Image (cartoon, rainbow, N blue to C red):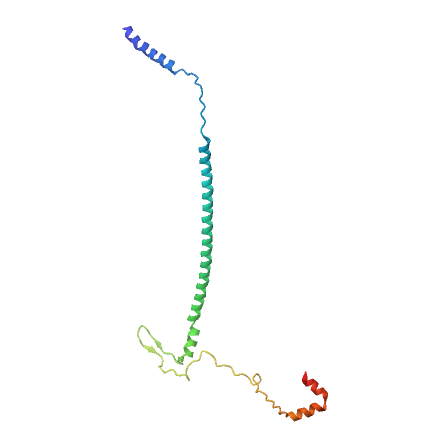
Length: 183
């Protein structure tokens, strides 16, 4: 009985011994192989050139976007100013005083005694009288009368006409008067 137990053990040691013999390290001569440098340098160069070109394209597109944005901002400012101008003109046109003055220039008359309408009942309160130019309220006061001191009557001075014979006689008598006239 002791022999069958020894047999597997001996078998394991023999297999282990063979594995140890096969696993022993031996020095192998090194074979020097050089990787080709040209493809590596080409790859690095292409990556660098691609990065620089990409950076330039990105910078150019950012500059164009900046110009477009500044142009749009200037256009928005101009449109905002135009809108403000139009709003001011609209407020000027909607001014009740201006509308009333324009209506009066067109011949409309403001009644002296207004009549009010009650919207709930539909009845009017006040005396209905036709509006005439004589009884109408005037928005603008009449133009002031200019005082006579500021607008004097023109002074007309009549100069008697001189005849040519009189001029020649007076010119012959004195030589200085002719010199003064010739100047």
